[in-house]
Image (cartoon, rainbow, N blue to C red; front, side, top):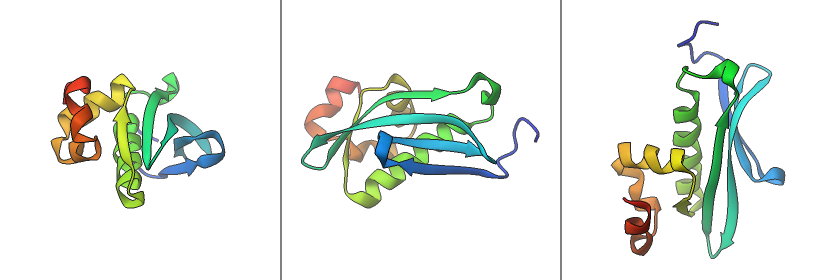
Length: 108
């Protein structure tokens, strides 16, 4: 696989361990953890990509698809993870997922 290929990449929810995972083929390349805060609110608390898979855009794809899933499920998002927060800052179309009263606290 070349460094910029997105072939055979998938993002999957693994609710038993509260995380979305990005897979390249049959290898888990990274994940973003979420915690249910009740009332349809989830906090994304940590994102990690294995160093072997860095610089391929996988973290961005992971967060984009995780936020799409949050929207589909009607979740509100607390971006406690710095990477998720940075992603939202670069993609203002998704900031509406963060409760309006919480946006300033996250710099959004």
